[in-house]
Image (cartoon, rainbow, N blue to C red; front, side, top):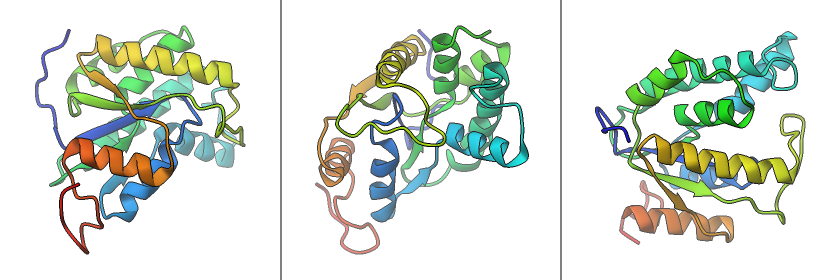
Length: 197
């Protein structure tokens, strides 16, 4: 287990398999005035598709992992030191989990980044949810693959010294309020009516 050196308790990761509702939850948190950071994987796919690049998960998974890691490291350096909580849609550890899921080479850069870029000790994990799972232009995994992804990521975060915590299923508002209540944050727009849950 890793010792937390230089971790940022305000840098909070939301993780889990694809299609579990992370993006919707991040939007709801952003709507209350909290800083949020979008997922790198989807951004990399969109960028590579626009450029006709090879770093796509269905073309070159190793290159895709490297591109995600590069973006995640830049996102961490840009946002993790902000005052107050910052919610990240995935973190550098997710790239290591992706490599394990796809049986890719776990590069030294992946392991270095996982040790160097530390987030809050608790990682909020959204479980697979068949009722809301949908495929789209960037999400091509089956539900079974999403479920396997969740388990691999859970174990990878454990291996890296984090405490994964299951976010209950519910409406977007219920999930948002659960997260804020668990973290002791304001359950009203922070620019409007501050107060604890």
